[in-house]
Length: 223
Figure 1 (cartoon, rainbow, N blue to C red):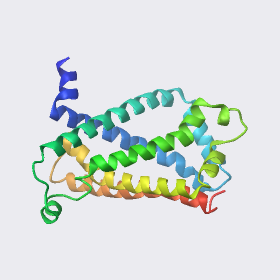
Figure 2: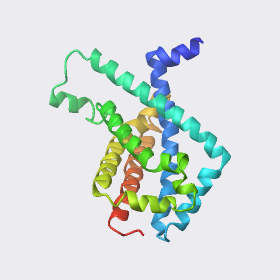
Figure 3: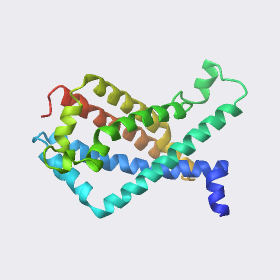
Figure 4: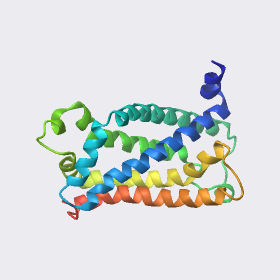
């Protein structure tokens, strides 16, 4: 009980939760991006649909999906709490110059970026996860998930929202990736620069691939 209280109420415990759940979500992003990138094979969605069907029918993946949502909710709750708490503790706002000297703007805006990503995520779940899990729109065989993507991304405003969500994700990851390792005590003068470099590459490449998918489908590059 004391350990659970430490994780839920202690400042250090909350940060540890943020780090652990953050790395868990990073691993999910990697897998999710790999599956979705199958659309670039441009074979009418055959490869993508096969990969999506495997993920939806695999028992272990479905169980992991539950853990993913719990981890996501925990990460969001703890993140917003820490952001609001830190904002209240700050007695005076940094001036523009001193703020930039001490940290990047995105590292001071994790709460805002996280909120934008959450809004995007709700829209994304509505478009695909709810449709594929709680309706017969896909499971009936009348339409595939790939065809659903083509229909959703016909709307230019949806594409704009998705791209903005990916940009927010990129900035969120720029700070969050290496910060998660730091919070968990993985901090060394030899390894930290490597982790930061990997984190920077991950923060650019993964959101870029995600953003290119709706753009490519909307422009007809993938069909």
